[in-house]
Each structure stands twice: as C-alpha cells, then as structure tokens.
Image (tube, rainbow, N blue to C red; front, side, top):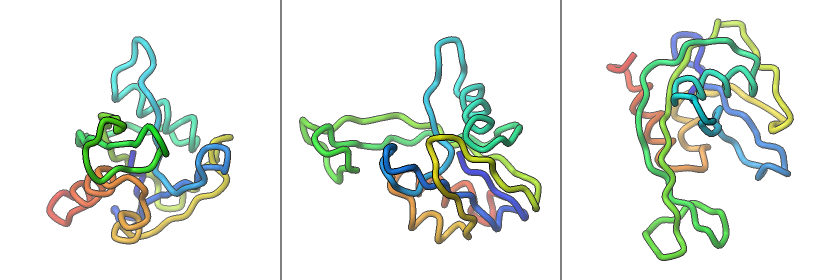
Length: 137
C-alpha cells in the first residue's frame, strides 16, 4: 500500500528489519481468513504504521519470486512462483509520522520517482507510477 502525504508529493517507504529481508518496501501483508483485500490493507496499515485510514484506488499486479533465492525474477522458469498483489493508496495528514512495528527498523519519505526506483518489486513500482501519475491525482 502506498501511503502518501502533502498531496501525493511524499511517499512513505519502510525498511524491513534484517530478519525480514532488510530492504525498502511499502506497507504490505496478506489477507487473513474472512477478510477482503481492502480489510487486510487497512489492518496492515494500522499494524505496520499506526495510521487509521480508508484505502482507495487499487491496482492488481503480479510479482515473480524465485523459490530458490527469494529474489525478483526477470523471466518465467519452473523455480519461479507468481504472487498476485493489490496495491492501494491512502493519504496521511501532512505532518504524520509512522509508528513502526517489529517488521521494520526505519522509514523515509521521498518523491514518487525515488520511491519507485528504490522498491524491490517491479510490479509494485509500476503500480506506484500509475497511481501517482499527475492525471491520477
């Protein structure tokens, strides 16, 4: 999920702790039994950042993860697993800062271009570009 503030000029990135992979990402998580994707997104937002918010503008993407090394894969191979992801957007107050959970050891705000180039997963980065395009705001 893309958390933005200041009219979409700031995008929140969370740094996953070393035990969780040690990379920059956005708010993310799985859908629990009985939840919709929207319910799960709002729960993960609250758990990972402390922000209570209503999500909007979902985009479906598919990420490919190598089952051998857990890295994004550039082509389809027998050892590659596809994962469907819904990327949502939520606006935070302009002066809001997250309260991080145990999964994360840092955060930063950056513009959408920097955020997209920093993200590990290409489908998520493309969804960010689409959701924050000037005509999408």
